Length: 421
Image 1 (tube, rainbow, N blue to C red):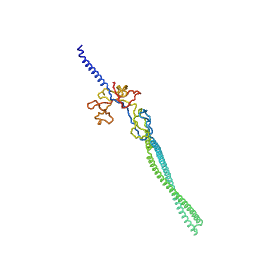
Image 2: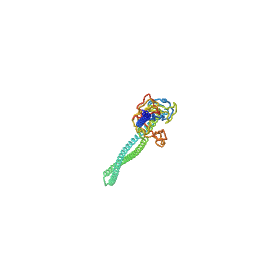
Image 3: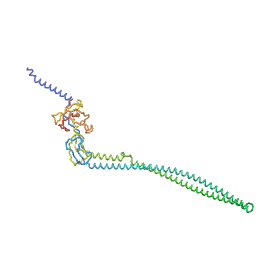
Image 4: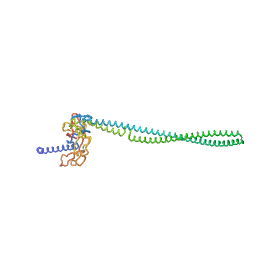
């Protein structure tokens, strides 16, 4: 009994040490395989609200920290000048359409001119054929008239010869009759024959004059036919020149027009200007990009805002999550889909359920932060101590399974995370 009393303190101490070691071993094993961290923060997608056009605010439809639904009007910039730009663009589009219509009409007119000139060429060619036929007919008539003149001239010569012969015979017969060597009746008959031949000669000469008149008339007709042919040839040349002129005008009209209809560059350009003006007009109304909260808003109506300069912050209500930072030695025990318990510092009496969404694939060690990775894109996690070699911490994104309606999450607040794999 004395021995037990003597060694009892040592036994108690040994037992306590053993229990402590066992508990420490269990806790260490649990911490190693079921990582947890108090280095976590609530995060949300933050959108800087900045206008795309400049102008005076004529309406501020929200208050700071107000909840809004997707598509709700937040702010309105004075649309007057932008509406005027839209109206002007519409006028320019109408003018462009009128210009294109006028150019299309010019093309139609020029093409009609080509058809008309081609018709004139066809008409001139027909007239040439008619004139050529008239010339050929006139030449044939002239030849016939020339033959008639030649025949009449031959008749005149023949009648002149016969008259000369008859006059000689009559003179001889009269001389014989006077000399009583011939009969008076024969002399009178010969003299009567002279009268007949004189009449025949006069008739032949009349026919010759008539034939010559016909020849003159035929030659005049031939001259007129040739003049008509010349006129027809000149008309053809003029018509062909008119075709060339009309074709050149049509080509110029087509070049001036370009593509017809709504595809014309003038109309397309005017439409682009109208679309641009309407787009800028639409930018005068700024709407909520999603369900969320407007915060850090400090402006009033009549304030002048500039493109790209934020004047409020939007917090996406559906994007709340937790970014937890675990030592790199614990990351191997963490997997996407692992069950997670989240405790908020502001609500330490409540635990939220979540799961691992993803694990970061890049960090910037502090001493290399200025030389490694794009600025502001890779998280730089400051170490707790610098005088000893510590494991780097890796960001792990936690997705909430559900968020109680009465719980207000605030981006940037502190949380603790325990992995329950």
